[in-house]
Image (cartoon, rainbow, N blue to C red; front, side, top):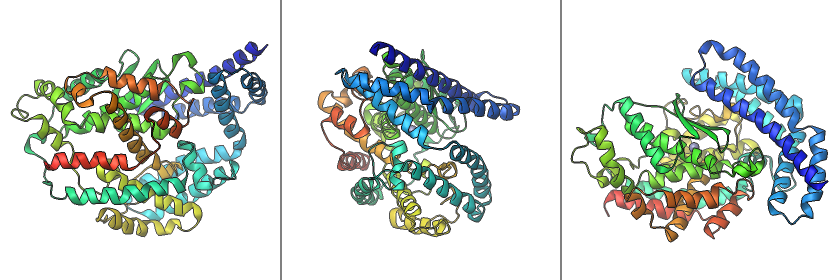
Length: 501
Ligand code: ZN
């Protein structure tokens, strides 16, 4: 009887997961190979399948089966089973508490608002986007009301959609440490040469770039037998059937090989997380990533901690030189590491370096918090943006296109999402520190040995899936609680190396 209940629950979850597989694949194809003419019928197909999936996810029969499974799990002493029903309950409660009309209104308003954002950005006209942005804030507040929680404010509820267990109070405390720490690093780095070294200027042949970055991804541990690499204008990673079918995309620019290389390493980091999930629990939340912050920690770990290190270049520079012998003749690993670690305040978040990036996030967090506690109106945003840029980074945009209109997130109603980028860097720095106590990372990387490092991440971060919440996972893996000073210390060391002192 009890085995039957669990089997029935797994069967229902499998059905939902297979629909998600189809959705992910249709979306991936839409971004990569679908001819432009296919967009209308693709939207219809996606709408149909997403509708079926939502219905299944809030089916009362699933709720009944889950209640029975909870009884079985509670007396079983089986920790996996207990984690499974806890996570299915979490998803189910979320699904049933959002009324269908609100969900469709949000979906509809996203496509409208994204179109308005695009045009407002092109025309540098914030006023065009403002009413839609206001609507997004209103809809997301209603969304948060549906999930009302005694302990969490509406903005916290939104943050929890992406990072369970995080609150604005906690994140605010983190910013109090991180912001001044990063600011003093920016000051310290100001003596760095502001020009790009001549050997970085290119042009870099596209095909060779792709061949090299593919070679790097494979060496780091991205399994191409269960993964692919394609071209898109915005790089991403998607996982139709983790851990068996995971896909990444990239872009290539002739004047800058780092955009492609670090893009591929970043997305491979995301993909390796998905490839490391536990196949035994395929189609269930135990074979799913726990949060965006943890996901980002995996991409940033490989991109920044490993990929931008001198050790990385000791190993990979000769290989890059095989592809591009001319421009790289006589360039050493340290020179290369310096060239890929510039620290310079800039206006655009996605182009920001590792040090200034967190300041862009702190700014967005502060504005979002204000939008949801009512202390900031959407009409205040362009002015506040300039003020905060001045305060945090010492520069100001001349246009809203390079200011408040630069990111797509708000047009999608993604509020509370930005903090996960900074959390990703914090986690990643702590993972590095913990691994380094067991494995000499620099020695391994210089020798081109990555299996030990990946194995550490596999066991402690990837395989647990959603068994542990983000902050629990961090503690289990590192023996430490979240400590923002680790990131600052690690960046301080890096800035020191680049400065040559
Ligand atoms: Zn990422």
